[in-house]
Structures are given as C-alpha cells and as structure tokens.
Length: 423
Image (cartoon, rainbow, N blue to C red; front, side, top):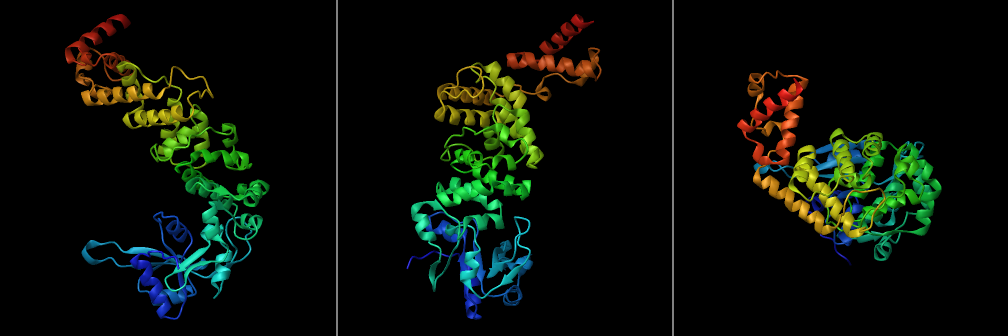
C-alpha cells in the first residue's frame, strides 16, 4: 500500500473522527501533490460527519462554508505565541442543480464517499487517503497521474456545465503540472467555451494568474485555441494567440511581470484588459509599465540606463531585463512588433550590470536627489509653479547624462543660464 505522510494536524482530525465512528480522509489536491512528490499548499479533509457533528467534536471551529458542509477546524496554537493550524473539513455531499454555471443551488449530505468523490472536477483531484484504507481511487486518478493527463470525472460536459470555471482550471492544471488535457476533456472545453461568460472576472483572473505564474505560461495559448478568449474579457481576444516562453522557473514569479510579459508592447491594451479583469491598481500600473518597457531600447550606455531607472524605478527596470532575457533565449528572432536595437542575452546581461553599477555608485535618479532645493530656486527668482517644475526636470535631465553635474554650485549656475534664456 502506497503511504502518504500526513501532517500531524490532519492525523489528529482524522483520528478523532474515526474514534467517534465517522469516516474521514485527506482528499483532493493534497493527495495528488503528495503522489507527485510535491509539497501540498493545503490539506483538505472529507468526512461522513455532518457539519453539526464536526462542530460538536472539535472545540475550535469556523463556519467557513457551512451551507455547503465546510467547517474549518483549528488545531494547536496558543503555546509560546504559536498560531493555530487551520484545516477545512467538508461533509460528504452531493451537489444539487447548478443554475448559474458556478454554484449548486443546494447540497445533499450523504454517507457515501463514492458519491462525494464523483462530484469532483478531475480524476487526479478525486482521490482520498487515510492510513487505514490507503489511497481510494475510484476514477483511475493514479493512472492519469502516470499518463500525465488531465481528465474530467465522468462526463466532461456535465462537469463543465456544473461549473464553467473548471474549463480554465483544466488549462491551469495542465500548465502547473505539465500534463496534457485528455482529448475528450479538451473537446468539451471547446464545445462549452461560451459558458465562461457566466463566471466572475475575479475568478477568471485568479485562474489565469496561476497559469501565468506556472513554469509553463506558454499554455496560455490554449485559452485562444479552445475559444475561451472572447469570454475572458471584452478586449482579451485582441492579444491574439500569444508567444510565451517555457520558463521552467528561471523568471520571477510575480503577477505584474508575467501579465506584462503576456501583454508586452501593448501598454494601453494591457491596462484596459487588467481593468476588465478587476486587477488591483498597483498590478495594473506595474504590468502596464513592463508592457511599455518592451518597446524600449536595451541600454548600452550609462545615461540611457539612468533615464530608464529614473522613469521606471529599480524593480521594474530589472524585471524588464529578466523578461527580455527569457524572450531572447526562447525567441531569438521575435519580431511581433518593431523593436529598437538588438536584444541578445549578452546585451541584456551587460545592461543589467550597467544598472547595478549605477545603483552601487549612488547616481542621482530623482528630483529629490538633486543637490538643489526650493530655497535655492526661490532665491534665484523661481517660485513654486509650472516654471519651478520645468527647471527641476531640466536639471535632472542633465544630471542623468552626467552624475558629476549634481553639485549645488553647478546647478545654481545652470538655473541662472536657463532663466536667462527664457526671460
């Protein structure tokens, strides 16, 4: 019997339920990931105990989704400031009719583990485990793990009509696990793509972000190939089928960077799509900047690098170079839009070294770092206002060209010269 090492908290919950005469198993993604040698993010438990019985057996619980049979059980904590561990325990259930393409109108609790597992999305997520019974695999999930295949439990069309988000989940699991999607399951996605229109933009965004943050963001092409793209957001189809590299973890797993990479060269379209997907303001702005930076020349000289660092900041500058290096590695002749200058890996690495040297030297990159202040400008006859801002920007431009110019005497002299030319 194949053994899975259960966390202590999971063992305690299962043991307590079994001692009380109920069945209990670790279930779903945690079983799948354990069998794949991956570390599960969460441990979910399913049980024949009903919510009220769960609440009676455990002292500390939270009604997470009690109408659907889910109770969060808190284990440990309290000693030495340790935080309690939280585990979701869900009663065996059968879902009622799905009228909104996302949530069942009702649920019926059942004493049958088989009925509970049969309602789940994919075979690899429909396995359960405890130390007494071992792995319970009623839908050949183990075989699909060996085949590296994503296959719906039962009829794929029925699973996707119940919950249209499962179509995107199939693509996301394919990217995260590097599994292929079974032909019948993939065909069902194509047939029912329109159903995604009933899913909230927040949930769509969540699945697509997880896909992009995987080692295989190139699987985003499946969103277009299956016909899901028009139902992601109004302007999403304008991207066309994207060219994304297979990253294998060699690029930062930051949402703004991966979205910027997907939408590169299309700053305004990037911001529009991310607003449609209800992305947070900071991510929209940073992803838009990454998309815009794709149209910039890779800097070869310090002044060019200083100007980009000044405009976009350290984080975006180096993230942009990371993206360009990944693209150069996989698409050395990529020209989906006219790009200024060569984009070889060597040139990108030299630009990174240039940026690091600029930061190490402490070169002035912002107005606040100029060695001149408001009192100086007022003394020279320039009160705060449009002229004040214009003069500071002109001074910064000169200092970005040559940081040695960032001296109070030189800057005061230049203010007089600039003022002399404009008055």
